[in-house]
Image (cartoon, rainbow, N blue to C red; front, side):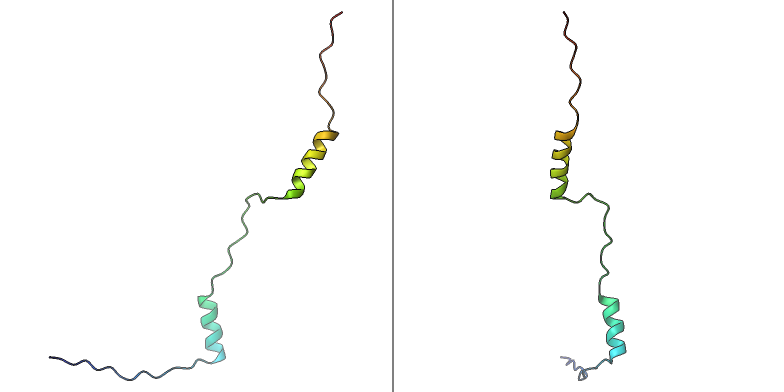
Length: 64
């Protein structure tokens, strides 16, 4: 029967330079802003206002 022994583990303390380097490696960069359309509630009011302002389509002339 074999017995495994491990060496005692001692903590390693990093300095501020190592901490900054490790943080920059581990942090995920922000995703780029996509070009997808974004919901804007003001756009609905603008489209509704343009609908009321727009001229009405011409009517067919009446036959006499």
